Length: 378
Image (cartoon, rainbow, N blue to C red):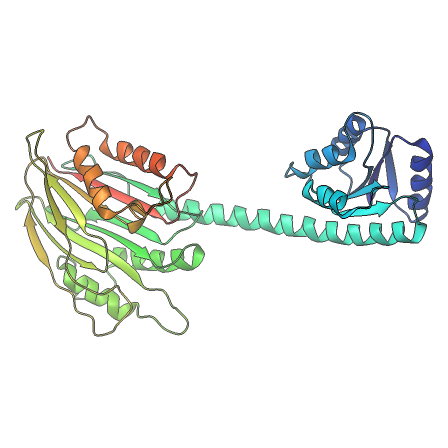
């Protein structure tokens, strides 16, 4: 049985509406003013409210606004009872959140029809809200699963930390780092085109592919070979339109050398220099198309020496493709300048970087997924 709340300071209207609606099989609750009406909304959680517009204290529109701004009550269908019939008045009512209007004097057939229609929409809204909550819960579980796949920070013989901020609950960024043997550490970060679940699933597939070492005789110490194998395995098809960029490197701690290759990905930034007034910046990137675009794509390796005290940053383009508060788009150069300026600051650097980016954007979430790996070499 549907519950209907009628709010009106005119007792004769209350009696009339209660009688009509109870004959239709509804449970009717009444209130004589806005304050009492809100209390009864919280107590009985009705499916539909019929509320007079003009009342002492809280009027009908104020009651409507309070109810519609509460997510737990927003699916209640709200009908305003009024003798005002100008377009401007109706616009005010709709802006306040009203779903429908009934004009005075009340016509019984119209009242019954509008109530039936309102209850149908209430059921639809309630079901949609329930499905939305279930979907959000499932996405939250999926996001927790993705986070559980990410590696734990490393503290020795070098220090690796990271930040991972999907633009939604799920995103297309994914990364990993682990020791191939006692001397060689693999580090990679990939960014799948798009957002949400359709981008997350390919990212997880790549992560599992690389962790499992499922291709026999593939040299995982040779980044260009790994990228070629990924490109052969994850080609775009009619069923899957997702390509991804990736930066992949292997660091040999004995030789203090980093061999790396990239596929359409932003360059890694290597910072070195012991003097506080000088920071040496190297952009580590090799030519190569994003993975999945062209079967014949070729990839090459490059090698660099890692000096003592250097810091390496690997990141997705969400770290610098940020719309600033002035509406202008930030740039890679700006991000590099930020990293350089924090080079000799008191640690932790990554936390300072993240705080700066959040202040730069001044929004709760970023437009794109944002992932940054920070590697500090002793």
